[in-house]
Image (tube, rainbow, N blue to C red; front, side, top):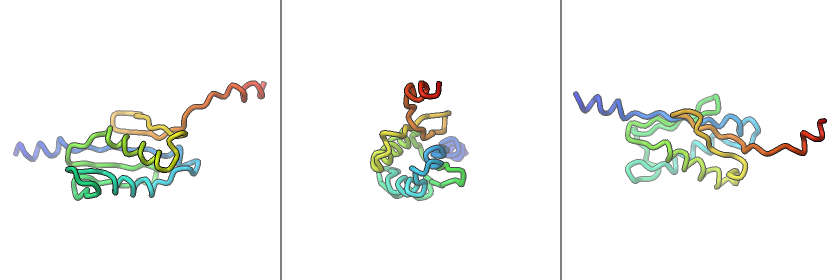
Length: 120
């Protein structure tokens, strides 16, 4: 029985929330999901997820990655940054950890000093 308890403790669930860039129409969730399927390595083999890792896209602009094997949240951030660089979005979008198991894609904050002066 200790082996069964060990497999349940190794289960990881990570969420990547891309709702802000998707609302502006600059980010395509389907392409990102396909990129993760193709580029994720499990056991040193790329693209062969099997039953160990499941990548699903939610209707609310989220990608949920569920893993039964040890899986790093940092690796998801690396793959997300790689996807942003490939699509030339890395200069405008950043990856931020909003909680323990959630990453959010956000736009960089740009100083709006010139706009504030025009409003006054």
